[in-house]
Image (cartoon, rainbow, N blue to C red; front, side, top):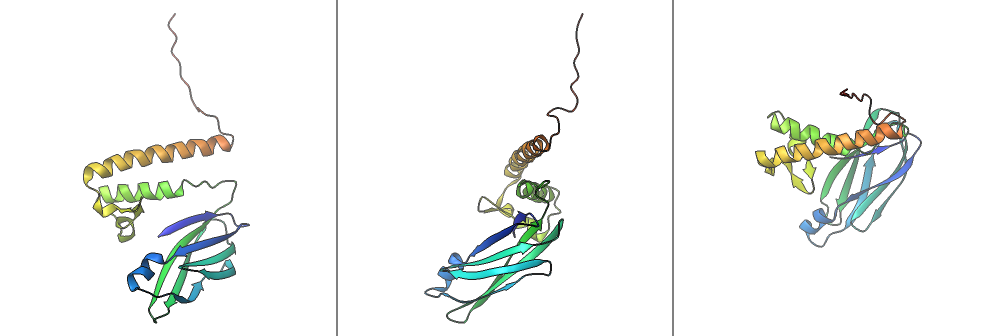
Length: 173
């Protein structure tokens, strides 16, 4: 499931691309789009733009995750539903590293043999984790650790933390 992070005071538009789904059905279009938005978020607007559906959301409570659903009906009567997650965080403390951190957690869970269904189907660069062999997973884990650490360091610097907390030196006399 795709996840987005927003500040509680931000108003953002989110899009779901249905083009692959519609192509599989043939010459059909979206005839209806219905959004389910949980209490706490405000639906500011919605629209259909060709093979995409859009929703504009505002509000939310800091440190609450909201699952947003979009159900479409096609011109031939088929219906489908998709969802995405909106994580509401205070802008002063959040960073966009959440996706890398989630990917790292999914890879580590898979390596431990304890991945949930969602983690096993976690999409990275349009590839599913279940398709990686052990060597690829270990290399991916290493790369994600590097990205997460780099993001954390950048975030710490932005928030005024010193670059190095402890520097120890040994001098020879």
